[in-house]
Length: 222
Image (cartoon, rainbow, N blue to C red; front, side, top):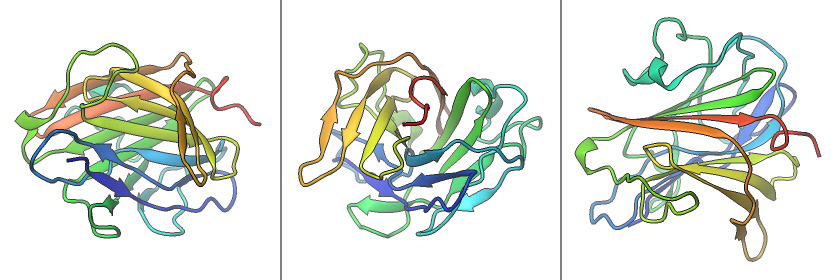
């Protein structure tokens, strides 16, 4: 069964990100677990320094800090930032379900860490799992993640809450990307491709996935 989690944030001013649907997909699994492990983001490229720990809520605002160097996957394999990164990135937690029980807390803990520099927007998902040996993840061709655990990052650089670039990875960091258009009939176009980086690794408590999305072209203003 597919499990989804949801949150809603409102961007009020720079620097801010608006998240409307963090979610993690699990398919072909009889047990139902609900996670929060992806973000749909209304992106206003941030300028301020400093990091926040932000629980998801209807009108929450995330202040995303500029970083002096890129965080790496290895910095989070203890299921938390190592000492160098403690308090240096924006932290998002407290995700809520969309399916199967809309508005209820997710049954699996997820923490998301965000930052940016002149080149990239960084997103690190720390996904806890009460049964980590049952996480579904395989080496798979690009754009072929169906049936896997999937982490979705949606970036709404148009600021209209209707269109977004989608960056999807499985727990091993294998990629899928596309364009999302919301409307009476939501549309996902997986023919759009761009160059970005991702890595992922299982741990004894779940898995960690690291994404680096270039500011050009995906994060450029429209």
